[in-house]
Every structure is written in structure tokens, then in C-alpha cells.
Image (cartoon, rainbow, N blue to C red):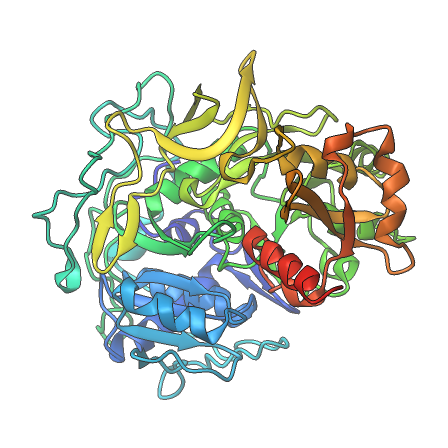
Length: 556
């Protein structure tokens, strides 16, 4: 797919009356969606937002959050999505290094210190833009944009363009002398250089031709409502999970996000008539993956309250779920009739789960991805085997000293720190994941984090190996195995388990007795506390480790 304009404006010209978005109980066509985005973008621009500005968007998923994303992108902003449940101390520590100007907080009572607060645009615009999180949306309508901008999106171009050597695999970090908007400069770490291109025969990328039409499309009063489409512009700065340290801000262009979407959709069909539920948060890269797949496919996206899940899925064909969600969905007497495709992630995937789903008419895919790669890198139809599939189009994977290395069109341009871009690849453009893995016949098996390996009595324990066995128990939702200091053995494994209320974690001792060697078997079993479930997708392994140490120190 080649976009020469913002994707939503492209689809307005191609299929303007088709349903683009379902916000709670309100449906918007591509034409109506563009009208709403124009009004919001105009409001943000009138408050000072301009191309290149950093904007912190602190919000859980909801209609206003989704629309804010689209409008801020159309303003040319660099969006930093924040989990509203992020501890204030961590938020205060992170924000100063992100070079932000504005903050937009939706449906939360908190402030983003040091940032100019954006207000949700309201009157005197031509339509109401007050979108309650609970449902009812816009009431009046504005005339669609006319003239050259509308004509520009009337041409549907559906050619997939191969990536040429001159385009490269990832947007390289600019040199230290390059000046970005808002006076931001870029630089690279002393030991790294910008990545070299990936072979043009191995990658395909959404073409990155900038919009050749009006750089500042205008509304009916002649005021700017959008900056020109430029797929090489930085659009997002997504915090890494911080599961093994302090979160970093991975910077992606629109081209990188679209390349990620294109690679997955080459494997997992998502067509114009389909509908994907926004089931994962936009402050996480997996939620952004759904967002960009929707824009690439020109299909429908549903944004609504997720509880109960079977109700949220009504009318949806696709969903991204973690295994616990799918287990609970399958336990329902009545399944959503339209659901037929699920992308699973976030934990080990039991064979019984995907078999039961298949029996109910749901095809499951699983894979491997990370924030730096704009979501999925490898994927496959779930088959019960331990591997995560082959590298998707636009990605290359290799193993070096047991470590998984990736080179891809979807790779982040760098890590943002104090106004500079720090390169995240080696001199050949490979990103070192710090994950252990093996490649066999092109299929990748992820063994765990190199940083997680610990030794007990001289024997190496990879926590993920033990967790895979424990997670296979039907009463277990997820599990973490962490080391605790031991005078005799150096370290011993302790398991922290999320399981059914009526099930005691200690009962797993018998379950693992004939499945794990003696030194791998946990010496303590603890229930995962609610306090460690921060509202994101990943739970910090470091926080689990600290919690276990505190529990044992207090004699529990």
C-alpha cells in the first residue's frame, strides 16, 4: 500500500462511506472520522501544537484517546503515550528526558509537571467534540474538506513497493549535527553507527513518498487542520516495558509502524470488511500495532469498554488477546458469532487453549515481538510447538553467541534521551535483543532473557524454561520464577503464580515433580499479588524479584 496522504484521508477518498470506527455505540465512516479529526487537530493547533512538538498523552483506551492520537498525528506531533497508572515518582523521573512541550490527560485526575496542559477542543468549533468515555459521541457534522486535498485522496493506490537499498531497513539515527524541530539534536552512542541497508530482496515496505499536495490542508475557514503527510516524521516515542530496568523511549516513524503492520498482515489476513477490537492499551506497542494495522488495511476498528470481553467482541472479527483472556472467553457458554481470528501474546501459549479455540471456530496466531521493533517480528499459526515462527516480511533474524539479533524496516530510529537520538544497532544495523534463542529451519525459538539466567549449585537455570512448564497447568494464568539468595546453593528458584482463587500455588509442587529436574523445581510457591498488576501488559520481573525478597525478609 502506498500512502501519499494521511491514511484516514486516503481511505476517505477510496471508501469514504464505509464504517471506519465504532466508538462504544457510535459508528463513524471514514468521511465522518476525517471531519472529527480535522476539528480536533484545529483545536490543538490553536493551542500551539505544531509539527515536531512532543506531546505526552496520558490516558487509558477510550473513544477520546483514539481520536486524540489521530488528531495529534495530523498536527505532526511526536506522541509519548503514558500509562495513567504509572507511579508519580517514575513519571516525574521520565518526563524531563523526553523533550516534551505539551501534556494531554484524559479521564484522569493528575498533572504532568513541567508541561503545558492541552485542553480537549470544544466550542466555538462547528461541531461538538466532547466524547464521553462512556459512549455518546458527536452530534453535529461539518462539510468534508474540498478542493485539492479531497481530490488527492480519491486515487486508490494498492501497489506494494519493494524496499530499495537506498531506503534501508530502518530509519537511521541522524548525525550529531542534525537539528530536529524544536531545536532538538540527535546523536549516537560512541560505539555505534547508523545501520546499513538490508538487502532489497528480503524486505518489503510501505512506500514512503511524502504528500505531494498541500503541505497544510485547511478547513472550511481556511485555517490549517493538518501538516503534510511525511512517513519519515517521528510519530511515537513508546516506553519499553522496563521489565529488567529503567524504561527507554523508542522512537518510531509512521513508515516503521506501517512496515510492522504490513509484515503481520501478510501472514494474518485482515481485510476491509473485518473489524479489530482495540483490546490492548495504546501506551503499549501491541496496542499501537492494532492501530496501524487498521490504518493500513482500511478496515474497521472497535473502541469500547472491554468488560465483559464477550460483549466487547460483538461484531468483531479480530482481537489481540493474552492467553488468560482467551481462556475466560472460551469458558463463556455463548461466543461472539463474528470472531474468527485471534493474535495471542504476552505469555506462554498452552496447546489445549488453541485446540479449544479452533474447535469453537477461532484461528489463533502467536509470535514474538518487542517495543523497539514496533510489535511483532516473528509469527505463525499456533501449532503447539515451542517456536515462534519465521521472520515476517521486512525482518531478518540471526543468532550470535546465543543472542537473537534483528534487522528490520520496523526498527525504531533510536532511543530518545534529553533531546538526542541514541542509536540502538551495531555498525551493520543489527539490534541486539538480549534474548536467548535458536534458529532451526528458519523458525525461531526464544529461550529467555540472557539477563535472567542464574545459577543454583553450579547448574544454570533459565527462568522461562521453568515458567513454560508451570504455565501449562490449566489453573495457572501466568508465572514468574526468580532467584533468591541461598548460602549453600548460591541461589534457589521461587515461583510467583497467578492462578484461580480456589487453587493453592503449593499444589503445583506435585505437578512439576516429573516435569522439571530437581535443581529447577521451585523451593517456594507464592501467589502473585494484585499490587504487581500495574495495568500494563507486562509485569516487571524486577518488581517481582523485589517483592519476593521483601516477603522472605519479613518472614512470610
